[in-house]
Image 1 (cartoon, rainbow, N blue to C red):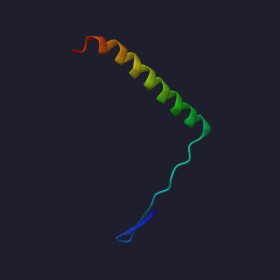
Image 2 (spheres, rainbow, N blue to C red):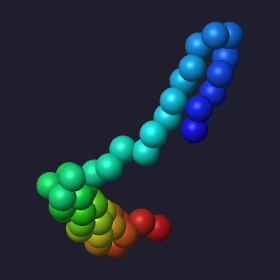
Image 3 (tube, rainbow, N blue to C red):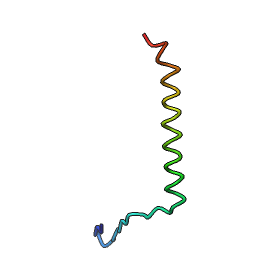
Length: 48
């Protein structure tokens, strides 16, 4: 996408992820979901 604003051009391109970044993002998402589930099992019994 290219925007021309007052003699200045701004170009935005989608960044390509490397394989290592994609694997790390998937691992982080999985750990986040696991921790969220653990948190819910610890907190839910005490909720009224």
